[in-house]
Amino acid sequence: MARRTKVYEGKAKVLYEGPEPGTLVQYFKDEATAFNAEKRSVIDGKGVLNNRLSEFFMSGLNAIGVPTHFIRRINMREQLIRAVEIIPLEVVVRNVAAGSLSKRLGIEEGTPLPRPIVEFYYKDDALGDPLVTEEHIIAFGWASQQDLDDMVQLALRVNDFLSGVMLGVGIKLVDFKIEIGRIWEGDFQRLIVADEISPDSCRLWDMRTGQKLDKDVFRRDLGNLAEAYTEVAARLGVLPSNGKAMTKPTLVN
Ligand code: UDP
Image (cartoon, rainbow, N blue to C red):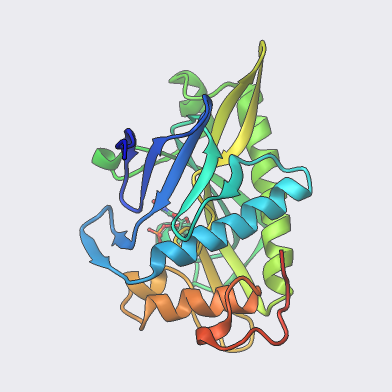
């Protein structure tokens, strides 16, 4: 069998050349990393869960007209995606204070924010992904003013969609990170949601108990990460809960 060409390998995913021009195969690994990869571990099943969860969120976004790179799932760990030119920014949207915002501004974790806040971080592991302003982004040519306006619009639409979906299954969307890519259609460029949307890149708190159901379970040693992700997947009807039959899925895609 012919070997596939690896295009890129990151901390949690591998990208291979796709079957047609303009496509890639995205493979989800079981590796978990935190604190700029200073903490790392292999969590059995994480890649399978994130492949399914990212499929669920991205296909939902596609269905409501928020463009994403997702084309279709191939198997347990792989999905077919559109190749994009990734904008070197992490776009974070926050609804509730947590993590680096709480630390930087001294706002207690769990404080609701007066409105969703969109932040940009420059993707550079060597620099630890620093927070940057729109001035930096434009001055250094990472994106144009039009791109920035489009990115904020996209990020807020993703926030509304994800917040609503999570609310429906008793989970508060505290914050999340997305990455955005450019695609070219003739002479026109379009920005679309890329990378992944999964509990690796969101903060998800149970609305009743406050239990954390996201990567903070790993970052802060709060328990079993795969169990937390399985709980999210089961509530969304994406996977049966703990192997039991899915009797009453809340949402099915
Ligand atoms: N996040 C991410 N990748 C990163 C940094 C942050 O996916 O490299 C996500 C993180 O999971 C959280 C949100 O972005 O949902 C905001 O993260 P924050 O800035 O609070 O940083 P952290 O506390 O995770 O270092």
